[in-house]
Structures are given as structure tokens and as C-alpha cells.
Length: 154
Image 1 (cartoon, rainbow, N blue to C red):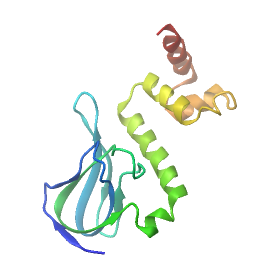
Image 2: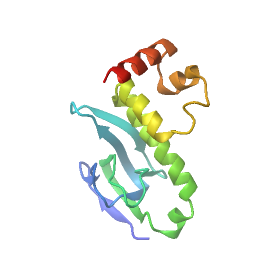
Image 3: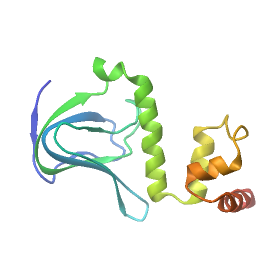
């Protein structure tokens, strides 16, 4: 795998890109983040030396995260179709769901988080108590009732 030097301020990946990679940071510092509809930045994670950073989406999906270089860095880009990554498809699916959840918790409204929950877990909405769904969404059961009521009014 080929090492590359990345300069501070360089953008390695933008949201909606289709060339998502995983980056191993040999030296330096990277960050990943999303930008909400109001233009506010929400940092997802930092990657110092010996860390991996990437977007949890699959190869054929547009990226959700930006990845920027915070310090001059030496990194090793790894293609998502690399056998080491491809052998980890179940882990990648899990990371993708967690990444999406964290982004939603940082920047989405309660209604948007609930709709995302229904889309992500359509088969379990009726199988778990509402208080568990509220806990997952980071809201009270009363707030969940309000969200569901408002959603029905739409």
C-alpha cells in the first residue's frame, strides 16, 4: 500500500463523493464530520497516529462525511474493495448504522431521528417497548408520543 503525504487543510473526502476510502494515519491528524442543513459542522471523530478513519457507507453509496487533514500527515489510503476491507462486510454494516445514528443524534430533529429509526429497523418497531425506542432516539417517552402524534398530522 502506498503512503501519501497530505497537507494541513487538505480535504480528502467530501459528502456525496463516490470515492470513499479508509485512511490509516501513520503520522499527523485527520477529522471526519458532517455539515447540517444550517451549515453547522458536527465532528464525528478524530484520527491521530495509528488510527483508521473512513466513511461507513458501502462502496456504491455516496459519502456522508467530510474528511480533512488537521496537521501535515502521512496516510495510507485503502480502497474499500481491498480484500482486508471486503472481508469485514458485517463490521462495515454495523459501523455504517452507528455512523448514521451518531450523525442523526448530533444534527437531526426528533422527528427525523424517528423516521430514520423506522427506516433502519422496520421489523422491530412493534417488537420493543416505546420507552426503548425513546431511549435509542435520545428523547423521553413523552417526547416520542409527541413526535408520533405530529408525524401522523403530516
